Image 1 (cartoon, rainbow, N blue to C red):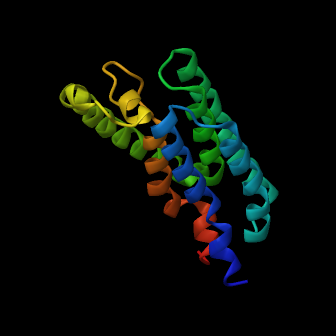
Image 2: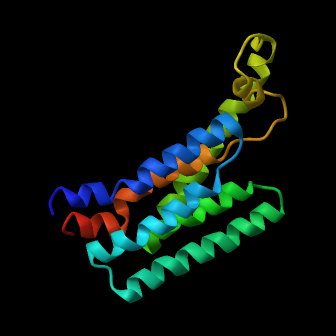
Length: 170
């Protein structure tokens, strides 16, 4: 069982990294990533021993984040994949890690956006021969792949989640 617990905790970090890299290189986050995060949560919650009430609270947090994400999508602030992966990550993070997740995502998103905007100004003349995804990423006034910030925020907040605390005996 000792070896099983660390393995159970890996879906969130692995899948948010995949989401961030996929968004960075394609400006899309596939639905299978969010769906896998959601499906993987329930067996992990069971093995770690979350009560039905605690699972319900995690689910409520995810629904709240999904509603906020849908509103931001409707306002064209973030993409649909961003909204879905934020909600799926929030399911894993729960109420304890929600604020750190949102704060880290905002900080990293702002920093990444600033660096990318500065890079777009500087890099535009030097894009000849770059892979298509790099040219797309550095296109002036192009979209910002916010999945990168979501990934970073989730990774920073995950250690403060109830799942990690319970898995590590806390």
